[in-house]
Image 1: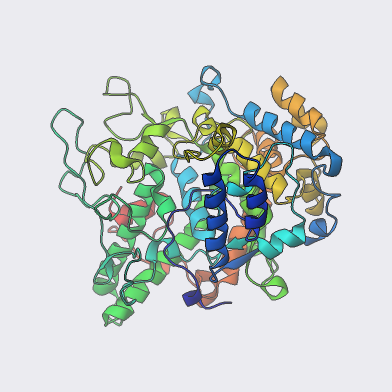
Image 2: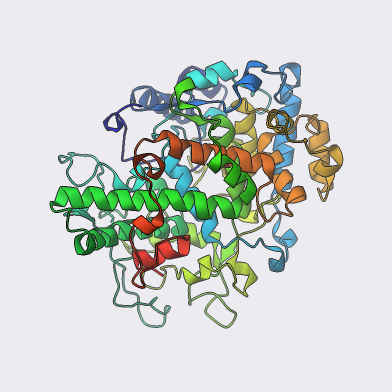
Amino acid sequence: MAEQGQFRRVITNLTHGGHAILDSADEAEKTAQTQESLSTRSAVVQEATDIAAHVGTTSFDFLFPDLAKKFPAEHLPQGKQVATVVRALLDLGAAMVETPDEVRDPELNSPIPAIYTYWGQFLDHDLTAATDRDLVINITDEKLPPIPPDKVIEKLQNLRMPALNLDSVYGDGPFAPPAVGKVVVPYDGIKFRLGLLAPVPAGVGAPIPPVDDTQRDLPRDDARAPLVGDTRNDENLVVAQLHVAFLRFHNAAVDWVRDNEPEFESDAEVFRRARDLTRWTYQWLCVHDYLRTVARPDVVDRVDTAEGNLLELDRRGTYMPVEFAVAAFRFGHSMVRGAYDWNRNFGRPGNRSSVATLNELFQFTGKGGFAGQLTTLPSNWPVEWDRMVDKNSQFANRFARLIDTRLAPPLADLRGEGNDPGLAERLKKLLKHLAQRNLLRGYRLAAPTGQAVAEALGVTPLSRIELEQDSSDAVKKALGAGGLFERTPLWFYVLKEAEVKELGRRLGEVGSRIVAETVIGQIRNDPGSYVNRTSWSPAQGVLLPNGRPVRTIADFLRFAGVL
């Protein structure tokens, strides 16, 4: 494994969910010549140049290399059919997003609390930091040839070591020499510095208890930019507040080590111990709470207890599976709500507003400008986590949406995306539409079909009847027009499998396998993880005030002092 010092710990100016090709400059140059904007061309070329100059990267590869070797037989149609397939993917993506008048009854939400949607996003940012801003999709609809798998492996790079090691939280650590002119994660000694809430005038909204706890924002500079290891964690307020919880968990772990483990004496020893306990707790929760909630528990158990794993470190080294990154793990997009029961200023009818919209949760971050002149989060906007973690809540809108092929309306018009004035209007619209981006990217990066992956795993593929089940006419038309009933995009397939096999309550077998194999495999392949360094369980970790170990995400938030 490469030394982590070679890797860039603090990552800025990326957006969520993209991937780039290191030699995309040549294609981008040719593409930009067909666009009306020279500024688009220069931005794309500079982006590719900056990417190529970066040396601290790990590889992407295919979880199913035998399928990659059969390219294009186990992939979506290509050759002369490219234009037809691209058009079908665009139509399919458009049909997957509900319009406002189609939004489902809240009673039809999943049994998964909303926190799991954003724990997944946080996990994604910890595993992958790809290097694009979706500019590799900056080509005409008619010309989107998939990149052969060997070229994807050669050119697609990951700025993160794909381990659950919380680089996005710890940055370069408290003992690194000052980095002049660079963003660093700020520490007060061996604890994280936190951002202070900004008080709001009376009548604007109630301050969120405990009102004397003002350290509930990310640390920021004077321009409101987050001083964190990955600025993508300030894209929306839910993941930003979750990042705050991780900062506070570490700080509480420092106090716990000092109070309970006197054998760790120096600041360096205490810091490393608190960091290990934070990382190990997080890793354990990813397997034993997160995965067993969003995926089939029997599949997770089978992967977790198996002697072998699809991510075999001695075969290809450390890598991030393309099938996970561009398809299966994007299942979380279907869980995103258009609005949330956020805190007491929202919630039940009769309050100032019944819900906090997704757009507001993007707006009330440093990147979103806090909707005013404030430089930190206002005191009426912190989350009340009890509304996001309760698996037994009586309120349906405190849960994630079903894992299925229908996405919330705001995901067709993403805030903060596609706003470059140099982009053509068609490209702006494409970059704002999450489903279309996901489908085009999967095609572009040679993800195998859902049927091919199912067969490789020994799972009976979905039938055409199952693919059509409860699908709209527009979805069925797009699938038929592109030949996608027989060769189905992996992202759509994973969502449809969850929809028809598990009623949208969790991932199906194919989705569960890809996600569990990747997450558990990365933990196994990390020599510093809880499974390799110790015979560790939460009973050997930090304890809650009542003496109980941290065994759930809700417990994690309690120990952090935010629940």
